[in-house]
Image (cartoon, rainbow, N blue to C red; front, side, top):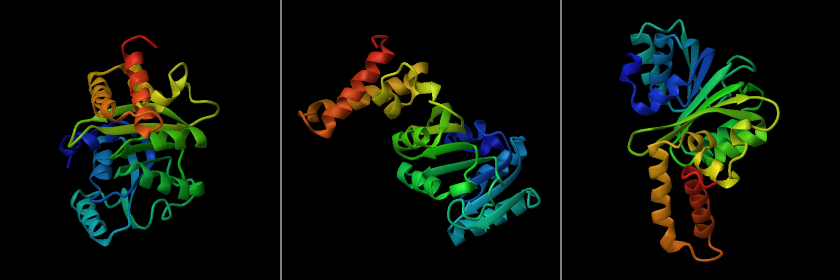
Amino acid sequence: MTPATLDARLGAVLALVRAEVHADIGTDHARLPVALIRSGRARRCVAVDLNPGPLAQARRNVAGAGLAGRIEVRPGDGFAPLRPGEADSASLCGMGAATIRGVLERAGVALPPRLVLQPNDSPEPLRVWAQARGYHLTAETLAAGYWLYPVLALERADGPDPAYAGLPPAAALRYGPLLLRAAGAALREQVEADLRRLTPHAAPGRPAERELATAQEARAWLDGGA
């Protein structure tokens, strides 16, 4: 397995990891840890999963790659199998944002200073969590797949996150401050799709009205009208 064999989603995660010891939580078949070691983006990995089937396949993949000395596969829930301070970086991929947030909230002192998160739905709850827990957004991207997968890199830091400075708050949380600043075609398409979807349903006082206003704020920023 090489980094080129990863799909765009995991490839985007791989590109945002640089670690001495990286923990891949919910590793499934350990494709990401194998690619991280082979690409030199991590010196050692801990691959964690709760389910026996994926764990067995992960062990086979690690052994087949000849990396059993550098990737340790551990059973367990979230960060529970990790010792405090053991990992300086972690990834959580392929889960809903609420599930990822729950894992992060249960991590306690095992939570490392750098995180790469790839939720399968809106990452807004993770951006809210990061602001509350002292993590700054250092990079974010949209990876192509069945839909556009958001990928966020976070690092623990003091003070307000400068990524959000000067942006409309609701739009930045919904669509991503760095993505708004980059104003890429994929984000523009996402905002326009939301506007088309929400406009017919945005009655006063309903959630769709607030969502529509957020999408309108985002379009105004992208068009230079903020």
